[in-house]
Structure formats: C-alpha cells, structure tokens
Length: 264
Image (cartoon, rainbow, N blue to C red; front, side):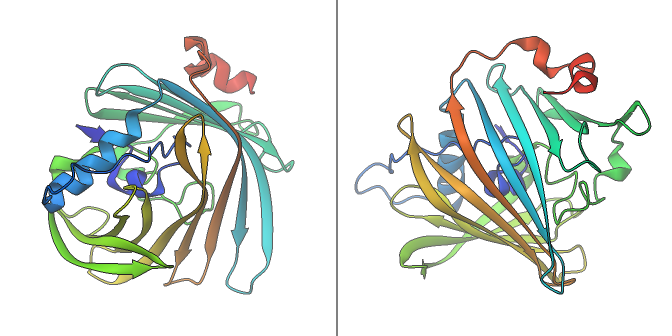
C-alpha cells in the first residue's frame, strides 16, 4: 500500500490535507509489530473518499519574522493505490494563482507546478524532488507518495509526547535518497501521529514535524496544526487547517492542468 509519502503520512497534509485518522485502536490484547503500527496508521488515512480544506501557511525565518499565505486544498481517492490532489495559493499577491497538482496512480506519482507569472505548468522531475516546495521547509518529495514497503521499521520504545503515550518507531529506507532515517512517534490510543524526526542522507538531524490541535470532524480525528521545524537552518513552516469537509463529492475536473490555470 502507499501513503502520501512516509513523510506525507506524518506531514500528511499538506497536499493531501487530510491526515485522515480515526479514533479506532488496535485489537485489544494484540501485540503489534512496528510495521503493523505504521500500516495501521496508514490504513486509517483512507476513511474518506475525498476531502477539502482551507489552509493558513506561516513561514517563519531564523530571526522569527513571519510571512503568511492562504491556500485551498482538494483531495480525491481513485481506488486503493491512486489519488489526485491539488493546492491553490490564494494570497498574498506574490504567490496568488500558483497551484500544485499531484496524480498518484499504482504507487507512482506525477507532480506539476503552475506559476502564473510565467504562465506555464512545470512538471517536477525526479531530480527536482529534493527542492524546497514554494520556499517552505517541505520538499517536493515530502509532497509525493511512496510505498511503506520501501522502508523497514523497528519499535524503539514507548515514550510520552506532550502528555500522550506514543510508540517510537525507527523507519529506515531500503534505498537512501532524501532521508537516511525517520523516527516516528505514533499515539497509542488513536494512531494519530504526534511527531517525526527526519535525518538527511548523511545521517544528520535535519527537521522535526509535529501534529496537534486534533479535532473530530465528521467522526474523523484530524490534526489541524502541522509544524515543520528545520534544525539546520532555523526556519519553520506552520500549516493550520480550517473548514475541513470530507466526502463532499468532488468533481474530477478539479484535478486537471486546465483547472490549475483557472484557480480555485
């Protein structure tokens, strides 16, 4: 099975907006392997057929100065291993009209970025996946989709994170490209991610993602605040979700190049 990148399982959002995690727990009395825990979290991502939300994205530089952006996001599933998502930048003026489209089909994804100043759609190449996504502390790789079977998992310990007990799990990629290791903390009671630490290809601690302000929306427990702090450069990206709606029956034509140019 795939998730919106392993980073996307824990950053989840972003293009997908929907870190769609229900309050269901594991079978009582069952001892779960690290892989089972991660797969359980992944499976709980797929409760809704589609989702949409408004977002406020705040970019904080190493001096604490902030820039705020407003976005709209839409996601739709097409079977077990396929989905489409699109992001629209609504403000401020320097990014207004920019859009980002992802098609995932049979565990492979394609990405396109529309830049209104150039009036053209750029397809993101494999070699460009390590680039920063629109100046944030997320990369195009983070915004993509990957198979959890591309990683091996090991439960390290159980640990308290902000007053909630979590499984701490080490995830190692079978092939090192963008991250050499990801440490995951998954809440024991709900399988909602609490945080994730990311290590660069050289094994250096790079950034931490945190997931908070969980709200029950249409019986789906949804983290509505996602924070990514880059410890190497001191910058942070914060994403806050609002007006989240699941299963609204999104139309297919939203997820097209023509709609990218048209905007929200």
